[in-house]
Image (cartoon, rainbow, N blue to C red):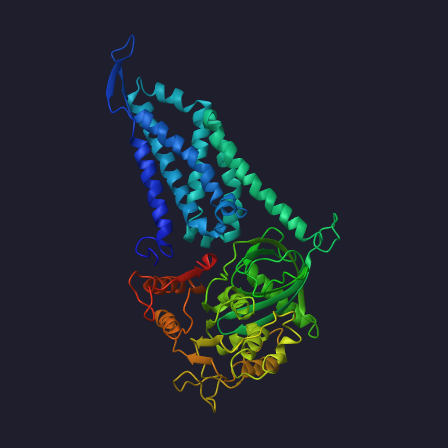
Length: 566
């Protein structure tokens, strides 16, 4: 289904429906069973009176619901999520509901506090004596503290505030303040401590499971050298620079259990900061037949930790020009779930920029003999032609699998860098195509080529001009790689766009129209959030009941989007 873009950006309608059902449930049972009457009771020895009504009971019920929602809210944000274990849905898919259940708790707590403030400061007499006695009680002090904590959690989880304070501050403060909030709620109303105990148990399970998994990966449990020694993993890094920033290609091998395609790891770089971790999806494929897994990551240097990582790689390349830049890494994971479906006949992947790390393993798997897919297409949008060098070994290997490609086309890069690549035998009945779109051609660096692309139109692309200098990749070598990677061959096209993005609905429609294999279709994407919106809408249009595809029944198209990019 398309996204619910009018109110909730980058959110599926299913998630909005679940939130709506939860709100309806809470609304109904917040008001049902309340006695809607008012009683005036005199105060002995005075001419004052108390005003009693059903709003006190309503406030208590809303507060109880806020307590009861707390364990669910924590479960919705756990990495080692119990909900994921039960449903198979990756933890990141619950982030939307986590944010909104937290906001519901905030509203409920304010309603609870405001109503009891009105009751104790206005409806009960005499004043201000009654209110002073009320607010000075221990349970009320803890209630005010808890209200302050939940307000802090809301304010510092707003996107503008996160950009201002930094993601790491948000992550660490969120965890610490959430724990303090649970303790304050327990002190506020001990009779409902069962909900706080459940919340602490869920939070503790997540932290313990995360620590145990990390410890097992880094103590050699897979190679039989299990011990107390915790060992980080040495990595090698290459950096690529273009007018829009720096990209780091990080590779390493380590003995551990194979992950599922589509899962990701949290990586920590001890040389920079042991307290920070960031999620990255491997661009390489797992090897179930070997205990040693090869990892490749394509990382865009933004602000904060990734910028420091790029600076570290560039500094190492300058100090030791004849050696590959290296840094230790600590892995946590894997997280998420598999995205491959061995029942599909048609696979279309659409990615933008570094989103190729999410879709590249899917293509590798679809091309293998183990996959029944017969119609396969890779669509990748990059800003500059030299961005192809990010995945030079993999792209050269894929080009060698295209119909008519020379056997040596991929061997130039795969022998020394694409180690243990999956054995691929693309049979004649498998249709495979690569389409690359360059959105920001730089005419000052590239000259018009002497050949044309096989995309039905005469499009120009660079033939190896002077590339911008890189810090750890030789400029001449990179120039040669880009020229080789962009060389024309059947079913491989590079299309220049003038600072625009490709028409996603048209790409999906063309793929479906040219499909020769009937059966289920899987569309997998990763990149900017706007790309996900367009991709979901295009797939939803194909799944409309009554939409006939090639004279058969309505299309059966599955859409998988990398939620972490949103």
